[in-house]
Image (tube, rainbow, N blue to C red):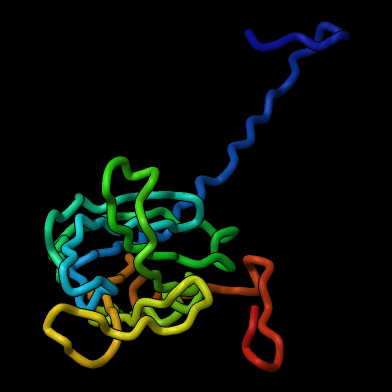
Length: 178
């Protein structure tokens, strides 16, 4: 037996499957923050919101700390269409609901740059204000420097993996921009 066409002759069926797109997995660890912008008498109930290509994750809320320790870990799937986007870490202080959380600072990372480097970032990043200017330290101990956050960022690409930008439809101009 088989399928019969309009002339009562067997017909062949061809099936085509879309090849499965396997994303790159970006691992993001939010370790701790320090030198957050607070007044002398204030302590913070804070959390970090991590946004990667439309995917949103929040750390747990750390209560009554001016130098909160989060130690939270997240994973995000990155597809070729996400390479021109940024990862944004925003630290906020809450007084009630997270929806009314006060902005304390942010840092931004270009996804393509993170993936191309293939190296793990493990260290301090300076927090910026809404105008992307570094936030001066305003800690209760009067330390100098800037507000900052310790992050660990890695991906599942190995050194022998390649991100072929041309195959993904991207090209760099003379300045290196995509």
